[in-house]
Length: 176
Length: 200
Image 1: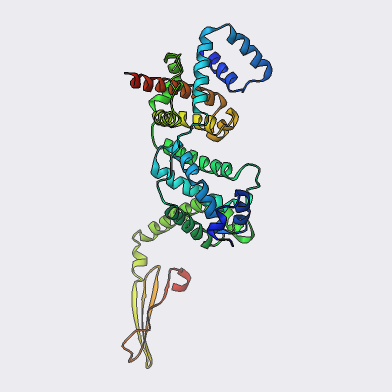
Image 2 (image 1 turned 60 degrees about the vertical axis):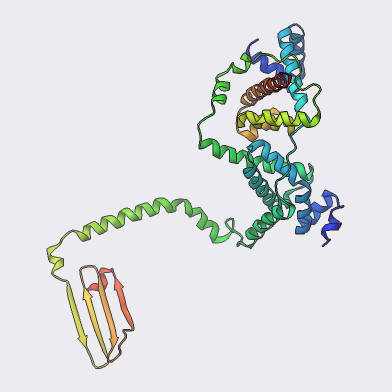
């Protein structure tokens, strides 16, 4: 008896064959003692299992078991409802798939610009300057490099600076 | 809202309707009533008490969340059982990705091993008390690979057809037939060996 025939006998036992095929298998079975023995064994196992699933009791008390379920339900219900299917949030959710590639491109662009800027440039290096402006009411200090402009403003007589850095920009146009 | 004591004599159908309206005490009664069965199903598939507790609790949480979708076409406990089965299958798939295929499964899928097992001609379960029979079934189930055990559980305990098992296990009907055949033959031989041990 080959494997396919054995599986067919099993399907017959489980009532999985169409009527015509089931009749053919029944006829073949009647003439094959080995197949009959196999089907008898399969049937005995099937019958032994039927209605005899091992009974295993939960190893926790009703209260303990329920408390964890209840806590999880309450935690999930306390979370804001995800509104991914309507309005602008849906559009945003649609764009989420592009976030990773866009972030990758941005990082590469940033690194490329940074490398260009960090390349020693004798002309730019000459523009590094620190300027101090003393007036009656305020004192300001500014620091300028090729890609950054920083200003400290301090009230005259005040011990504490209002702001450590009032303006920081990488925008080249503001450096002119 | 009724008290816990009043709910203890209420039918599942009424409890489900109350729970669908947000009555958590009614749902708690349903959990108390069927928790052993849902846990047992998870345990029969996972064979780990800890995992079975976690997955059965997760099933109850999902049950609460989807309760409005329950239309009463099957019994509530059948519906809950299907939820826990799906969770167990998901978990088993995750675990499968993390480990090599079992030798038993590889042997079975290469074909022929189950045919080398001798046919058990004397019914090894005959004359056993029900409790003893259940213990032996449990012991034999523990010896099977999870693929064979799951097919057996879904076919014999859940009474699902080949097609439905294949859909749930995401495999072909041929694979279901092959696994079921191997699992039954292995079970028969294990039960026969327990019988021999008892006799000797």
